[in-house]
Structures are given as structure tokens and as C-alpha cells.
Length: 493
Image (cartoon, rainbow, N blue to C red; front, side, top):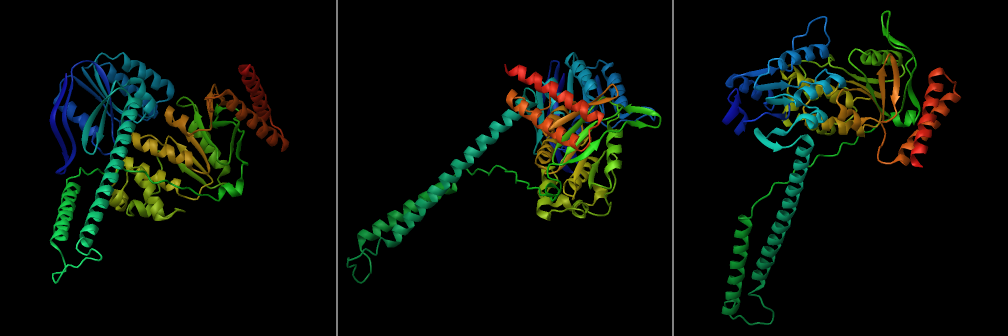
């Protein structure tokens, strides 16, 4: 059994997190979410220290020189699952895992005969495993039934209620204020009735009584206004308007045309890659760990670094000045004003005075956010993002997702986060058996007609590219598109 009662966790004398009560008596899987720094990992460590028969798999793991991040993570998970503890605590277990290993972990957790609490930013993974969501909001733990999608539905319904309650509050407040104003105006005019002789006193008993009555009514309304249950205005995210000269410079032209083989030394990872990116397209690359995804984008960047301005994000990225503040680091290369930059930082939970923190004092997760924002607001023709969602909290992933969708220029992304990839990508390339092939199922899936239109547009694009000189890779793509068109046409019949 897991039980927490009236718990307050503090850091340097300040409240980090309060848990009123949390009691779990039967095997279940709980998804634990919250902003970076909200106390998720601290809560897991508290459970580890205060309960018996607990296994804890941390997010930061000691890596052997001969093993990749994915191999290290899987070994830690295998060791943890072998313990068969009553309580299993997993801190971001999908970090560095490819999609096949995420499926493996999903299956293991579904069969786990104990209580599992899982911190994760992967929404698809949480939807697959979680039966309950614990969410840290405003330094307090809240519990919600169901998986992550159910949690989002509850949150959206809650926001709609808050918006409606605020609208009713504003309307009622305005109506009372208008009534008070009218009564006060009437009272001011009550003893100045036109054509009436009030004598030396300037007023009459009747109009004095009327004026007092109006003042009394006004005071009653003012008292009602004072006791009106005040509702706070729900927070509304400000729209981010990206701009770019690249759109005018390149139009809808092909800006990346990569048909080389990819390898390390004498070892070939991808044979005759055929990857094509037009200006403004959002493209994802998928494949198992070790298949050559990062090597591929490194070679693409090396080939085009003199032709294009590339904003390249990767996990080991350096380049922030330790003594400068967050805001100073981002503004150094920004093409946007400070207000816009602060809005973007705010979307990733870096708000108000936090922007003035020196970089040397911020956490690893905050550094990643700063690097992402710095790249988003620089003058780049294309963004190349290698696993940008690692170490981000769920709300930051969703914010980044929204910004990439609205980003005006091309974006090339590597990610094992299935939902993130689906939501930001126009097309996807998959590495399999040393080949790179476009996944033709990544399109708007609602209507066959729309899918057919997409394929026909791609056929037109390929024909246009072939006019500049055909290649084996383009011929292959053209044939595949014709087959896909044939399939969709037959599907319509």
C-alpha cells in the first residue's frame, strides 16, 4: 500500500509541494505530471524513503562508455522490473528509448502486478499505461481518473466553466455598477425638480425623502457589489506571431535535396538516402536507436551549412554564456523584440523575473528550454531539432509543438515522441534496413480525397524537380507516388 497524508515538501524553507492525501491500496499505474521543478522527482524520492519494498529508476543514469543512452535506459528498466517490488517508481523512463522499446515497456507495465508511479512527458505513452493522473498544479497535488487524454478533457471543461463564470461575474458587476450610477444620478437631481418652488431651503420634504431613498438603494447595491463573489480572469495565452524573410527568399522551392549514402567510417548506415525538404515543410525522421538518424542530420547540416542558415538543436548543445542572464543569451541573436521573446519563454514556464537569472544558476531542463527558444527566435532558414522534447515537462512539449506548427520556415525533427511527431510533421521519413523511405501514411487521415490531393501535389513537385535532372532516387519516389495514387483512387471506388 502507498499512503501519503498532509505532506508538505520544502526546498530552502519554501514550499515546493503539498499533498493533502494520496492512498493507493491495489495495483495500478499512475502518471505523474507537472512543470519542470514542480517537485515530481522530489515526491518520488520521498516515497522511496518512507515506504518499504520500493524500486526507483531515476531519469539521470550512469552510462557505460560502450552503451548508448537507449541501451543504458533499457538495462536500468530491466533491472528495476526484475525486483517485482510492491511499488515501482519510474522517472521519465522513455527518455532515449526508440518506439520499439517504448512498446516493450508499455507491455511490461500493463502486466506489472504492483503500484507503478511514472513521471513522463510522452502523452501517447501515458494514454497507453495510466489509469490515474496525478498533476502538480500551483504547488499542490491533484488527482484525476483515467489517462492523459481524459485529464486534458477534464482540464478543458474546467477552463470552459471558469470562462463562463468569469463572463457572468463581469456582466453582473457591470450591471450593478450601472444601477448604482443611475441611482446616484437620480438622487442628485431629486431636489432640483424643474418648475417647483422649494422655498428658501432650496428643497422640499418630498424630494428630500426621495433623495434619501435613492441614496439608500445605491448603498444597498454598493454593499451587494462588495459581497459579489469575485472571479479571476482565466489566463489566456498571447498569440505568437512569427515572421520570416525566408518565405519570400525561397517561396516553395526545394531547400534540401540529400541523396548521399550515410555512414561512420567504413560502416554504411543508410544507402542512397533520398530526403527532400521544401521551404516551410515540417519533416520528421524516425528509426531505431543506432540506425543513423543523428548521423544523417549531421551530414545534411555539413552539406548545407554554407547555403542555409541552420538553427541546430541537440542534447549536448553548448553556447550559452554562463554569466549572462537567460534573456541576454536569447536576445543576443534574436530577430524579435523583447516582449515577443518573453512571451515565448513564458510558454516554456520561464516567466517574470526568472528571465533575469544568470545561466550558471539554472537547471539542465531550463538550459534546454533556453537553447530551444534561442534557436526559435534566431534568423534561420531551417531548424534541425534532435530529440527536442527530452527533459521537457508535458506542458512545455505542448507549447513547443504549437510553436513549431506556427513556425514559418522548414523544420527537420528527430523524435521518439509519437504524438509530438504526429502533431508537428507534414511528412515523415523512416530508416529501415539501411534504407530511408517516406512514410506515406503521414497525412490528413480524415478524407481519402484530401490524401489524394496531397499525393497529386507531391507528384507535381517531383515532376518539377525531375525537370532539373532526374536521379535514381527521384525516379523511385515518382513510382511510389504513382502506386499510392492508384491505391487511393481504388479506395474511393
